[in-house]
Structures are given as structure tokens and as C-alpha cells.
Image (cartoon, rainbow, N blue to C red; front, side, top):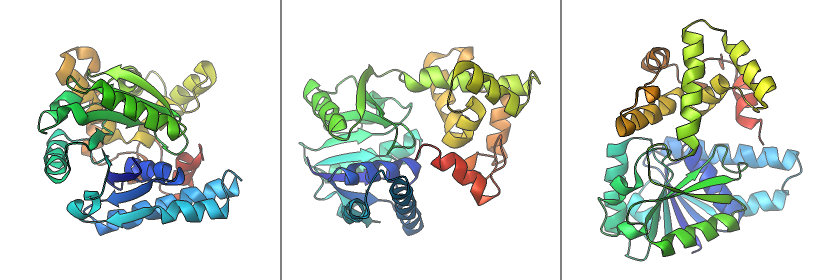
Length: 295
């Protein structure tokens, strides 16, 4: 499988495209918004330039990577030659189901369809397709070009053959694939999101301030980034969505989102993407420090 289609040019989609293209795959990057495509391609260029500055890649490798990516605003045009499709659209069940219905209609039975969802049931997504054995979760971590982990999530009907192929593909990307089963939040977010939520509760209940909470976790627990800064980086709306999925799935109050998180998302304070969350990112330099610290 050398021809890859990535649906969604946002943070995860452009990072996934960058990663595949850098390893020599031919990538169709698809988004129905020309503005999002342009922004996604610009991000890829900036990240490649940072890697050149740190002598991780050469100028020739940058050119080859960009040459392997072709943007499309048409889903049918973008995936018509794809051998492998990865959906990296917004973390919304209805949206994903609609996209998967279209992918299923436009692709042959031998095409594997992966989703980068961080919490939504693979089994539920696969249920709207005619080939659930070919549907799998491929949850990359952010920033995708740097982070090694990929959670490989088997749905109820995902075949062993599909799982093995995706595990091998992940290794070819230089990643470390870890197979998990299809339960709300999988492993990464089932453990991470309650920690972030508890950090937000600690702020909400005035146990400590933002910087104090993050300092304790960075210096005391050897975390590279504090939980509140990490929440800003992930996107507070995404954190809330994942917590809601887990709460609905488990019916356990420990997954109930902190009221402060709910209010911040309602007010549009989403973290880095909105220039304001638990920290102030109104200056471009500040936002870039968070985005580039792994690059």
C-alpha cells in the first residue's frame, strides 16, 4: 500500500500526511475547505523547516516530502486511487459516520479504512460500512511527526489480517504500534483525560493556580508538559468531547467533565487554537513555543 488518502487537514490530518509523505508514501490530503488545506500545507512546511533547522532532515528531504502530498477539496477525487484511507476529521460521531458512509461507497472492498479518533467506538463507526472487517482505529499522538506511539484499535469485526497490515505499516513509519481493544477512551485517553480533568478540578476548587499545578506535575512527576498546558495543546473542546464519550460509555461519574472545562469551551476558550485557554497565546511567539517544543 503506497497510495494514502488522509481526510481532514487539521492538526492531526496534516501531521499524519507529513509523516507518511516523509516516508515516501504518495498522500492525497483531503478537506472540503480550501482555507483549511492551505493552512494545513503551510503547517507542514513550517514543521519541515524546523526539522531542517535542527538538522533532522535535509532540504532535499523537505522537497521530496512536499512532492509526495497532493491536496484535494473533493473526497471522490482524493480517494479514487487510494489503497489505504485515514479519516482525521473533527471528533464528532455523526460527522464521522457520514464520512465513513461516503468512503465505503467510493472505495473497493480491499481498501482498509482507518480512523484517527481518540475515543469514539471503532465498532460503531464500522457498522455503517459494508466491510467492517477492514475498519480499524489508528490513533496517532500529537505532534504526529515526532511522537512514536500509535494506538491500533480493533473493532468487534476488525480482521486479524487488517490489524497485522496496519501494525506493520506503523512500524514502517518509524512508530511503535500498540494494539488495544475497542472500549471508550481506549488506553491513552482513558488514563490521560481523568488526570487532566482532575487538574482542572484542582484549579476550579482553588487548590492551586495554573502554573503551580503544571509545575508540580512537570517537576514532581517528570512530565514534559503540565496537564493544563497539555489540555490547551490538545484543545479543550477535544478534551470535553472525549470525557463525554467516556462518561456516556461507562456511566461512571469519575469521567464527568469539570464545570470549569464546560464553561471555558462554551465561552470559546479552547487553548492554543483559539489563542486562549489556561494560558494566554495571544502572541504568536507564545503559541509557537507550545506547538514546536517537540520539533
